[in-house]
Length: 265
Image (cartoon, rainbow, N blue to C red; front, side, top):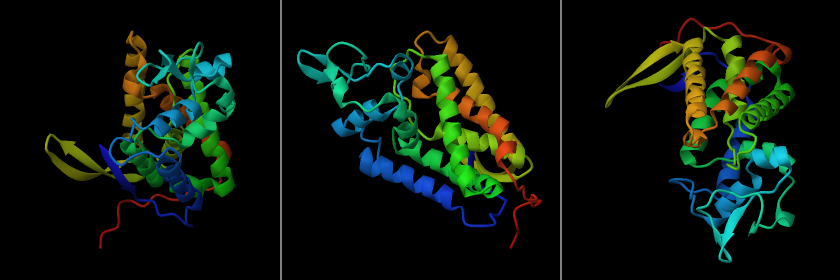
């Protein structure tokens, strides 16, 4: 399933949602210097920003600084990040690890990662912003991102793999949306082998399937002795979604009526 849009019009321009999308895009292309194809993972600058400003659980729980392993006097980016011994950059060049939950929230590992996140933020974020106002939405979004990372850290506190992306914060938006507008209709692309079709699906079904999928994949990740879940922080998604479910009533002040279907012209 690939959602395209919902059927709830916004009452005012979603300036915060748009600003968040713009900020994520600018960070990826101009601060991380990500590429068009695969995020240019081979770029020294891209990798350096990922290690230094991605949120690494080991750093947050142990106060360590992690970096590239140095082998024979040379940096080896193919070795997982190390948090002790000879490495690059030296600890004195690292940012405070406790700012990384916020920097990581605006970083992405590639163009598809960025594009998918921003699509979900645009579809579901504008109406959640409408429900609570701009200032409340900023606070809600940032807290959801922190809650998402917190669960990921609790699950694997010694991980040295950088966690990055807006997915956790956006999962909070999805958790809020599913309670505010469960009967909203989401225009969705359904792929069947090489064919596809467009269908309207209730938001509770679209988002319900998504969070169940995250839970199942997260459980499978826990049972996988090699870990890492293919590089996806499933428990960050679950943590963000849970925060959205629990906090939306405290933040949302207005809930609009749901149109019965998409308008036909």
